[in-house]
Length: 316
Image (cartoon, rainbow, N blue to C red; front, top):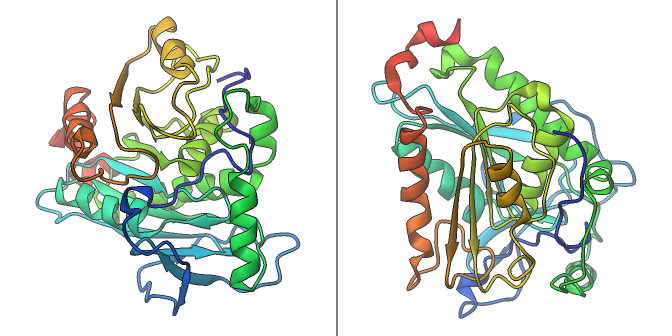
């Protein structure tokens, strides 16, 4: 893809992915011990300039989140080999590049994908440094929200991608790792896609813009920016999801979808009446709970989950 403006809000406030559907739950950020991540694989992409505080975990709205990530990792969630389709997806959680909603937009989604025979790989990408103290961090998050939903808040893709060098490098490394172990993981190297939520959707689209040689099998930005892009003639199929009452990205046009249609590339878009932002697999009581099943059906329709090449031969 070539450059053209396409991001909705400013980089800092663009893609906050807190678990907003759970607003009735405790909104406090409660520090917790780091969870066990026995299958996490370090990607070896380096650290973060200016980072001094250690990686820290906390819970908010009932889900696990992390911040100050300076070592990128990839965690495989593999289906039973007997039901593996050969398709795979790199899952990038959101969090405004200050945190990652690992549980709501990472692990839960990956398990659901694996249950459908799709190998899922949760990317814990590097983040901007934040203060070690929780009160100071909360202030940083509050500042990030300021102006994020303004209708005139925009960012050109070149500017956005320039500020995402580390997450893009982490995505590149994730692709390289999966393809190097494709036979072991029962993955077809030609059927690896990218899915991202909010800031993770921005990472997904920025990677597609800056690293088209990765040739992802599909792109799935979930409640991400809808800004227009210049779409390449061989752009991958796109599956996008947004809630009409999303406080960050709704009511700013649907240029992203228009761009794919005008280029004649495959696209499917679901606009749900309610759901807000950060609904993960769906907000209870709204039709947004249907997006994941629609996504699985879309993968089947496009042939991405056809199992005919899911054997070891697919990895050759």
